[in-house]
Image (cartoon, rainbow, N blue to C red):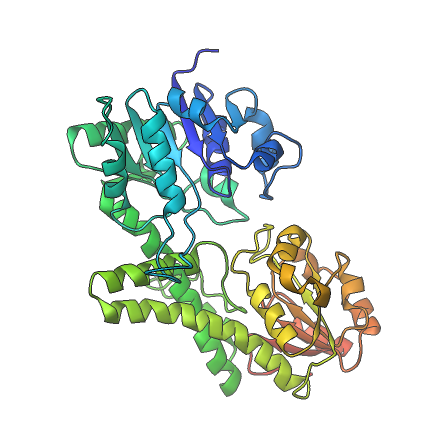
Length: 457
């Protein structure tokens, strides 16, 4: 089959894989190739057991794979034939040198840019899909356009705004698609080509175009604002617990204010995922770099509140359980950072488990999707942690249950059965406020919810 356009994505992770799958599904006239140097990951994409769990992803992959969607490890060959290349490689937080702990580690991104530069034999449009610091495109352009082949590369910014667990819906029905380009003739022409791809299924009024730098900064800023809302309501949850207020009632009323809205006002054990903390710390580093220490301090406080909230969760367990949990079996319900994903990056449950171990408790982890990642995260303490897929067995003989992920299945458990099999008094620490606390108290549980002033059974 002869394709009108050939699109390549370098990086087959949580962003690149689903995004390219939906583009292929919606644009059968476009050949879409996803490459990665990780052969086992590509093998998984070509199998019945995809490397990531995302509701609806399997069905879309099956429709497009082999038709116009291809997964390969032939990076150089794919670069040569591509017209448009999406760069979706990992950009973790630096762990060394200047900016360690805050700045983005761009070594994988730069290696990719240099490989495109070396291998390309024709002009190409390069699309930044990874979350990058503002003005990264300028560095990419310097690398790409330093070639001696007379080639021209136009760099666009097209940040993702996906939420794990709803990524396919977010891609199929986005509230906006953002494309940033240079406001030059060639930049605007490249931008229009990308607009035309998305216009196959996204209404034109939802495809927003800006200058290159605004697009790069928007992604960091959007995540920072969302995380700030979570940290803000979590800080209020502590005050609610001290005063007898109910954080859900406070948030509900606040959400009715049209100036505020109701989204991201759900108090919890803390936010997680690959984006929020990393992007905020990147923003902190940028503010410091550009001589704005007060702005940097403000945004860094959002991360500090989040970590404080997670540590506070275990501190409340200690307080309620007679100031000691040493030797006590604690069932940790959920290790994924949120429901409907197996992703554990920056999961609050990870920090909760580490805090439990520091108190010499015995954590028993139960999660429907996240065991492989959880075992990787806890590789250094595997001999101190129990993994049990069956939540009933995880809770059997436990002194307490700590709900760390809002899996619907946890709320649907037979809690009378769980109560009968636990040590007494039986505690439930609902870090996501997904359980019916009053019903659990009637069974006999001592329930502690986040941001609730009444916690005694």
